[in-house]
Length: 304
Ligand SMILES: [Zn+2]
Ligand SMILES: [Zn+2]
Image (cartoon, rainbow, N blue to C red; front, side, top):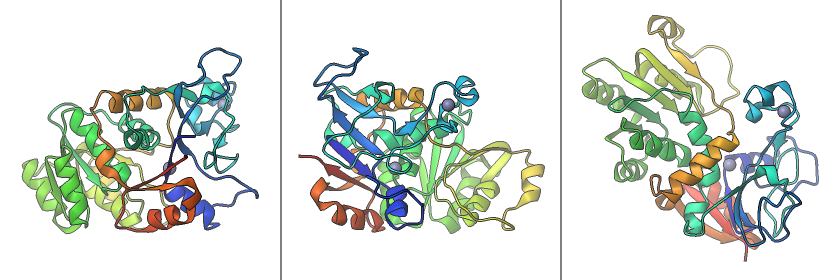
């Protein structure tokens, strides 16, 4: 392995919030180099590759219908199967995609999460000039904002954190707002119509609710964040009144990862400013602590 990324999923697994069979090697975000080539001849030794951590059987009805990300026979590396936080990993070649050598280590380190963001954005129709709100400017929110800006949308990034708002503005957002200012900023930029698309990238009932409130008539709301919350708290009447389309993307497909590699390789998406710290694999405890720290964005580990 070369570059490994950590995220909240790893924290949940290590903390025991997501039950896994022990022992388990965690890690689902990784770039590596082929050391021993497989039988298909698809990759030569020395080829740099991205690993799609979402396993799929390619046989079942969902796989055949174009939903390998929902394959019931699949699973996530580092959760259902041993993952990538290791010197070496044995992978099915069908899970691999070539990554160009000119992509820097830091840029490569965000490609896996970018793939899930590409998948999320594919769930909404975004036309140039549309207004797109992104609630939450963590790594995923920042990447979603960049993809939307590249598609010509006027992006409004929303977070409490001033430094994250500054990064979003630097990387292509049209405007940013603190949560309590978001409604006013959206109204101002849309002449009171509300946003054409809203992406929720936090994962709380409160932000799900705000996403619905910031949406305009006939808008699409994409819940990228996840919550196990149930019950009240959403403005249900607005779902009807605005005739909203709700989307709940999960994971990513090989096509999404292919697009993510192209976005990074072509310089359309810049994940480098989102990398806040790098550790060696031996210092995984420090890396996990840094991932938990709200003053960081992307935490990477390098395999020496
Ligand atoms: Zn992750
Ligand atoms: Zn399947």
